[in-house]
Image (cartoon, rainbow, N blue to C red; front, side, top):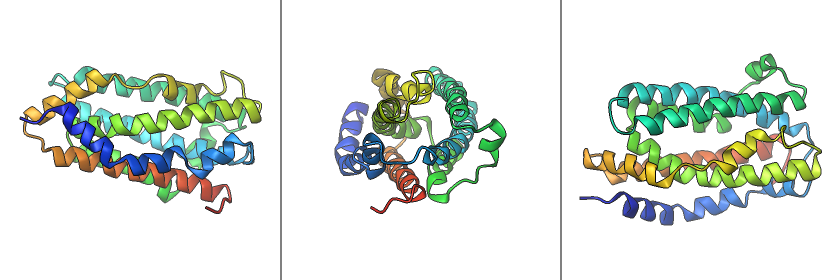
Length: 223
């Protein structure tokens, strides 16, 4: 029988090179040094609006498929977290002189949109265990970068604690590893192959890196 913790330890080890690229991304480094124009954050906010509103529906779809299983509380918590992030994003957008209408009409960048497209695929075709494994790896890197952005925006761009609530939400509320491992173990016990969980984590991390590459390119960075 496969053990969830052992499966995830191997996945994390295999994906460490991807994680390092995300955590040390030039976009984050430039923001930390106050070198990016504040207007570039409008692109970030516009892309995040499309990602979060898509993820809300995708995860709700997975909840509708797996809501009778013990993974229900975890899936509900993820939906609630995404909803809270959307509210916090509106606060950031207001600081950037963007209305909800502006966010809705902001054109998605294909490389940035790939992340939520894959989450949508998981919502239709994947399992709760695949999503849990992918998010366990991804949220750690995403949360760390959000923490860096929160500090940079306050230190160099004059944003207040309230205006960076979006970033603080992700940096301070990592998923409960014990709960996530229980979801993954349940999926493994039902016959979900470890290779599928590995694939989901690898794909989502690769799309995460594409998101940061897209943000850097939109900001006019060469890297």
